[in-house]
Length: 159
Picture (cartoon, rainbow, N blue to C red):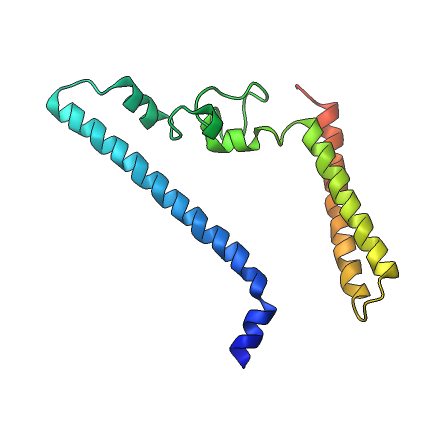
């Protein structure tokens, strides 16, 4: 009976645990891919042959030079990110740096905060107004942070 209550209460933990497991699996596959590239380059070096340029490019660029997957040319703006040029992470975070996405995040979190404030005042759910108010306060702080980020990204753009 206790295990049934546990899974009923904490079913949402399946999602972060699943993300963690799949992230670890992705890193394991990336490690095996880079290890295989290095072994193949060592094989060419042991035979005294020059490795093919495609193999060298794939070994230098973890995504194989495909811009759709984060390899290849660096993004045009901003030139320097927290992870340098190229790479999957830089491409994944590139579109989050512009003012448009900052303003979008500010409006979205503001709308969610307003919805929770409305729910905390007018929801007719017993004993839920305190929880709604707590989430509304937290989302208001997130909204203010996103709003400041949007203002700064628009004001100091390109500096």
